[in-house]
Each structure stands twice: as C-alpha cells, then as structure tokens.
Length: 87
Image 1 (cartoon, rainbow, N blue to C red):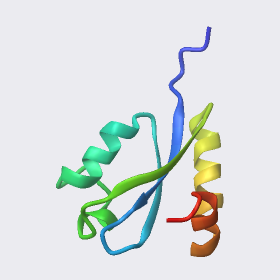
Image 2 (cartoon, helix red, strand yellow):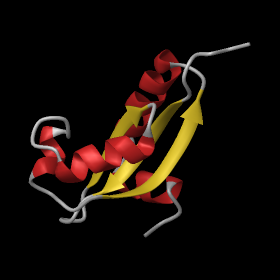
Image 3 (spheres, rainbow, N blue to C red):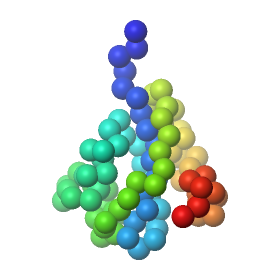
Image 4 (cartoon, one colour):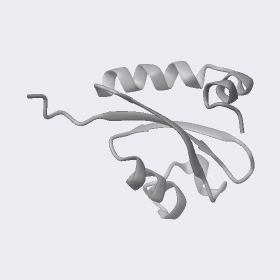
C-alpha cells in the first residue's frame, strides 16, 4: 500500500488578474496560506490578494509535480487559460 501523499499542481487567479502556479499536498491549506499568511504564502501572491484556486491536477510524486509545474510555468498566459478552461 502506498502511503505517500498525493501531490497537486494548482493555478491561482490573483486579484490583479494574474495567474500563479504552485504545488502542494493540501490544496485547502495552501489556498488559505496564500490568502491569509504573512510568511507561508508565496511572496508573489501577498500583494495580489485575494486569490482563488481555479485549477488543480493531482500526480503521484513530488518529482512529477515539480516537473509538471515547471512545464505549466513555461506556457503562455493564453495556453494557461486554455488549460484551465478559460475564465
């Protein structure tokens, strides 16, 4: 039985309309950190609150999550919007 956590790649829509991509094992906790924490949220999102999680995908390992995150971060904004189904 595999006891390793499920990893998620997620995209946030920030208050200024920008998109932020990250990885986590707990989407609810991470969204709360992005919106409320002074230290745990990403520096990028701290000045762009509130943020909303508009897309997520689960993968089996941190390594796969990191690779997928990198690939998504290389996409243009239009391709990211297509990935999440538009806004």
